[in-house]
Image (cartoon, rainbow, N blue to C red; front, top):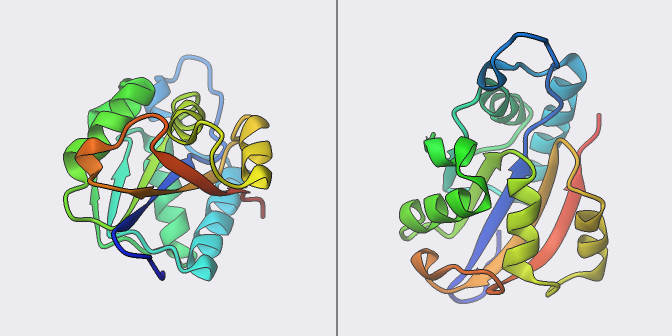
Length: 174
């Protein structure tokens, strides 16, 4: 991906459709067949867009792990992956803190997580700045297997609400 200067790219990826099984622990819920297909479509889209993260921060939940695995099988790539607990349990603030702590010198960082944290974080980081079309997509609630692509100029440890621009929002469907 072509980057201007020190611009960084943050991709927020909401996990694909998961099963709703009574009695099964939330953290252990798995993707449905549709979820696997949609996650693969997201992986293909990431590949086509040239969005290859150097670092992936993935919630440790089963459905997020499976989402990233299906995306990789379809063409997405990531140089390294980590599973911070705060992506699962920390809400938007926990995700933001994980990005600040883990980003380092990374230029392109992708987070695979859950709503409402992904939508709240994308909206808060951009505060209306960026593509009108992307913000309209985001306003629809960031459905399962959606990706929000934000651009940020600065150090990850300084990332704050209102500091990024929402460039793209994509809903992946097979």
